[in-house]
Image (cartoon, rainbow, N blue to C red; front, side, top):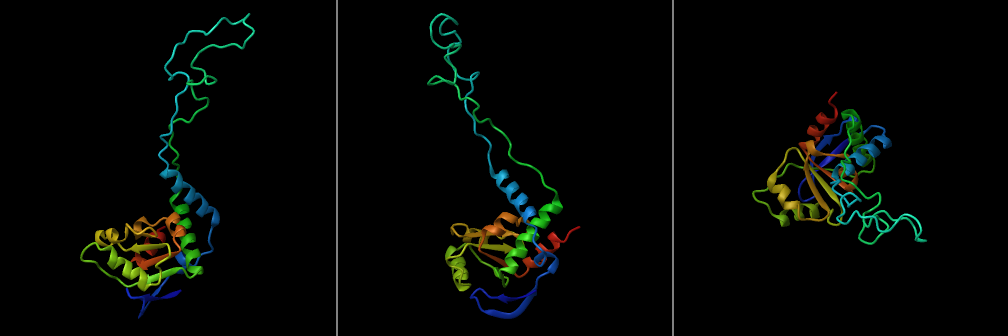
Length: 210
């Protein structure tokens, strides 16, 4: 698959980039995508939720009244969850939601997500560019030049660039990351994936590792 390389104004440069069919042209595996996105979202959860159970609520342990003969129900403790101010019954406890997946499955998931974007013509190749200083207006001019002003975009760089990253981080529909950090969730979450020209080879080498 050949895609034209665009400059920062959105015009074609006359160069093209070839997308590897082993990465961008595979038959997508939906279950691999599901598992990888599920893991990504699970790993974002802090798992610090907690509530007081009967053993952690402060209060008297004295039996409220005798067991039999009162005509009422049996009550063992004021800390019971049936009383106002009592414990939470079966409340949440701190836990770790993360789980592991095989590297090859995660590779397949990223390839599948990229294959979907390629089939939908939602991949754009941008020429290599630099910024002397972080400036949101300069980055916004690039997005406008590509006609993606009201579109969720993911810009993939060959390597981390602080000036470019800081220029786009305040824009609500923009995400910028290095090729090595590319993940299935962010690929699918974006409407348009923009690869800087030299990042294509980097991601293809990563995803074609045995």
